[in-house]
Image (cartoon, rainbow, N blue to C red; front, side, top):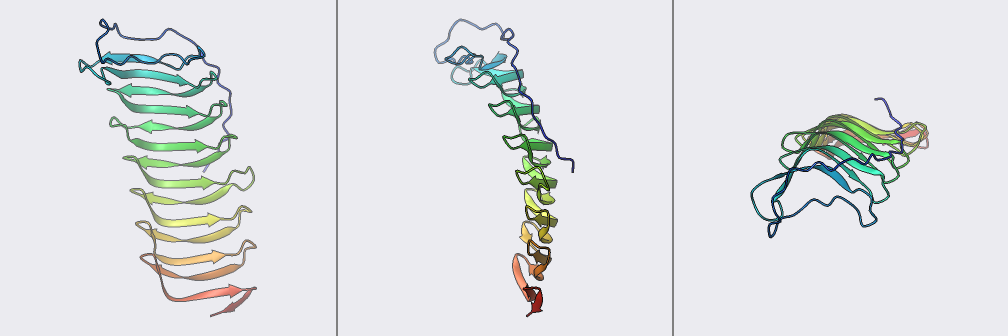
Length: 221
């Protein structure tokens, strides 16, 4: 999987606040906060009058952009009926990209998502379905060289299928399979020098049968 290094200090562009024509002030109505106490823009977008007095009197719709108090962009995307939908992007307050991906019409994560550490190195990437990890995923150490930490498949939010874990030096730490989040089948563990440490089978998350252990490069049982 491609590993991305995302930087970029985002300067915000101050525009006119897009708001629908609001009726006279109604008791209990909640108006959008548009600026921080220091005068910096906090959020920019459009609201729709719902006709339901109270906290949700104004509903967010269409494109919205948010900023941190220091002026850096925090996140941007679109709302449908007050729910985050479609493509969204997020940043740390330093301007470094934090995460990005899409939401369904119901506000659930879907499709490819990517995440980054604060220094800009990628931390994880994979796909969602109905707000749960589903499909291929990769997780990374916060280091530029040999960053891959673990990779494998998820099914409905649980690890399923073949998985490989690695030490920070890039060598395999362990490898095996899961069924619905539990170890199942042959598993092999290694020392960080590449020598096999232990090997055996699991069933429904429990060790079964005889496991072979290697100690100081000599096999014993």
